[in-house]
Each structure stands twice: as structure tokens, then as C-alpha cells.
Length: 230
Image 1 (tube, rainbow, N blue to C red):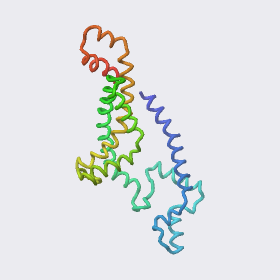
Image 2: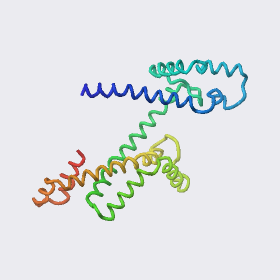
Image 3: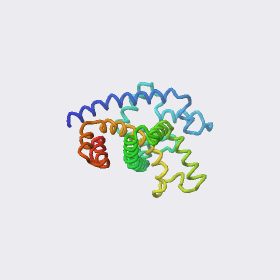
Image 4: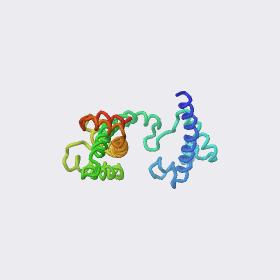
């Protein structure tokens, strides 16, 4: 276990450097001026523009900017947000609990739903229900999350008025985003569960269990599903 963790940590270093390098140079390739973005495009004196550029380190050579970017990032300093002027790490720390909460809700919904869909699809292989679940899982994997989220907002918030479309107060605010996050993941879990279940249902020990006269319910849930999830 220790060697595995060490290997993963060592693999993380070049990945992080690669991502940081790509992000840095992509940002520099974006048209526009950071100072203009900070001031909202309003005309300001040239002296103030130079002062802002000096504070941001934009007057330094590109390699110096890159080195400062990496060294500060390693110390947990991601700079200040152009939009709010607050430290980026502070902005992240404020939003991280809500992100984690939403991720947990999506995971709690996705795994049971995906397992049930996959198991039902495998048990009813070749039937209308199997085809319906396969098509449904394909649709939810293919639909962009942001589009499905907008559709949910329109139906349940704007049209029916049942759920709030924003906010972080109470369980109601987690229902729609949790469902949006869960359905795409549940569709993937369903397809994996179905494939695993079909393989298990063709195995010798399942045929033996049926030959012993065990009920189909016991064969499916005690033997097939349990081994398919391992």
C-alpha cells in the first residue's frame, strides 16, 4: 500500500506541472488585457495602468512570470480574483463545502439508481424494458449536464414552481442539482452493472444454483448480484 501511494504521488507531480504549464500559457494566449478586465473596460490614467501591471507582474519576462506563478501556487497563493478582488483560495474555501455537499448527494443518488437499473436491465435482457433502460442510459450519458440543468430549472422552478432554482438553504436546493449530477453517473454505473450481471448470469455456479431448485429471487439477489458488484 505504501509503495502504491508513493507511486501515485510521484505520478501526480508531472501531471500537475503539465496542467499548470498548459493553463498558464493558454491564459496568456487569450485576447485582452487583465488590467482592462479589472477596471471593467473603463478608461483610466496611463500611470494607473502601469501601476496595475507592475502589481500583477505583467511587466516581467514570460519565464519570470511562469516561475512566480509556480512558486506561489506551491505555497497555496493563487493570487486575487479579478472579479471580486479577494484571494482565490478564500473564494475556493467559501464554495468548497457546498461543492462537496452536492458531490455527496449526487454520489448517494447515482450508485443505488445505477445498480438497480443495470440489474433490472440484465435480468430482463432482450425485452422492451431492457431496451428502454439501455436507451435511457445512453441518453443521460450523452446529454450535456448544463443543458439538462436548464431544462430542470425551466420545468420545476419556472413552470411548476416546485423547487428553487438557486441558493444553498435547505434540502430543496440540493434536489435538482443532485439529480442532474446523479443521472449521468447512474447511467454509466447501470451499463457497467448490466455487463457484469450478464457475465455472472452465464457462469457455472448460477446454473448450479438453479439446478438445485433455488428460487430465481435467491439466485439473482444472493448469488448473481452480489458477485456482479464485487
